Image (cartoon, rainbow, N blue to C red; front, top):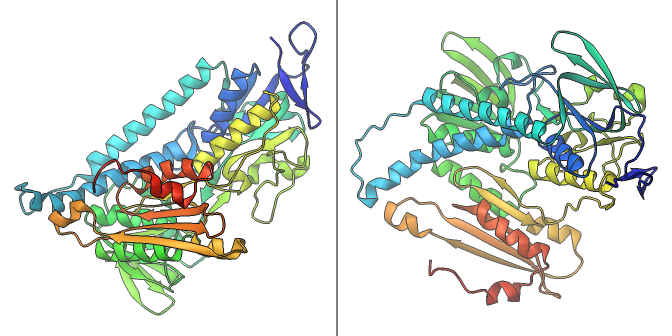
Length: 474
């Protein structure tokens, strides 16, 4: 079997007896068995590489020494969050069901502990599944903390403290990122998204600090389950960087669902009291809560990898600097996913990892393409976008733009009586008729935008959108 490997930046086909003679323990050693690391292991192994991978021991709440095979997305990110979003969505659905003829008692109980256990069971199942998949692909898994001690050498500290050293022709760092806390008095009284996904009790009153994905999603989750929620953020609208019209739609929906919004506001102090946590804002407002969530950003997991000693360059946030092929300043060391702080989404880490494997072991030499990547915010209802927002299109293009928007009441809401509009938007290049961006805030937006992303990737025009026949009347 011939194996193509990238040597000094050039793809070369190994010759002689069908197998490349290697003086290394592994062709590839990966530090981090999250989405990016596992994808790289799978693809590289399929290309014939001998692969080792290490990951910290499993626990739902991460630390510098705790992680788990499956990584953030599977254990304390996308998967458990989406399970809670599904659970919270039933709250509104049960309200709507009454006008569809369902005779429900006035009080419907929600059992947080039951859902929490179901969530925990699922992430435990997935953690085991990922381990079995690595084994089935012939990947050697080490449980412990990995660090780099040379351009071609890693050291793994096992759970009992034993240190193991291995050499590898290529090293891939895929250690992801961790939630951060703001530097304010009493910050130890707050929680991050890790703890929020594993709270023993559902908070009766939650204060959420932040205006990004995580803040908006947890505000929606807790409100959907019946909690009182105050969402505190520094800007005029939540979700900075998204299309302004969509941001306004999300804000209206959050308020419509009963979430208290505090724009242009920050927290200055948390104080423990007999009644709960006293939350003080920079406007002097005081709130009493039993949970305060900090959703104020994440930082790359790079501190304990010994990177600077080896010569791997980092930026001022601690993110690993890489070139367009995910290669670091050391030719034998590569990095993908959130630890590089490029576009911090699980599907992007999967793309970067698969392209890394194709470049290094598949002889294809291809770089990730970050254009027209769809992404979603799982608020209730959700927001999803692909391509350029109206503001980005104005900034990045020279010609005239055409902007098409549609705001309507979903058919389901006409019977339920819910006052919640769906908003859809297309941004089009006036000269070429090419669709530059699409946005939607409303039910099923992520699934709809995923299909539209294919059209944008193919360079679809507004005329082609218009000529497409609908699958249904409404």
